[in-house]
Image (tube, rainbow, N blue to C red):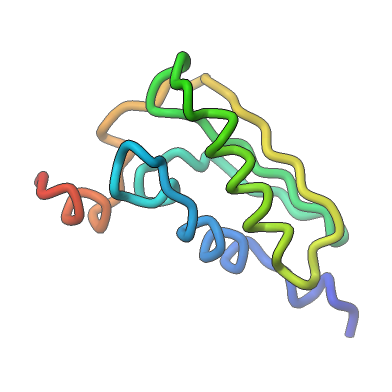
Length: 104
């Protein structure tokens, strides 16, 4: 069994739940900022967005996401791409995220 069989999207999403937008007390997964994860062999590519395109914390958040994924033993390479289509909106926040923010 190769290590790539152990690496899956669930592991990546769980790791990304440790990454927060410093201005919002909810992780980037529950905020709906992660649009997709691709795994090829042991290389991981993440497409994510920001709450707004001009967010000054964007490079910081993307770097934190990259570093967190790189901590996973099976991962060889990480690429985090910031994309802005479709634009993020509050409807993308998960139910858990809405609870943390106190909105329904």
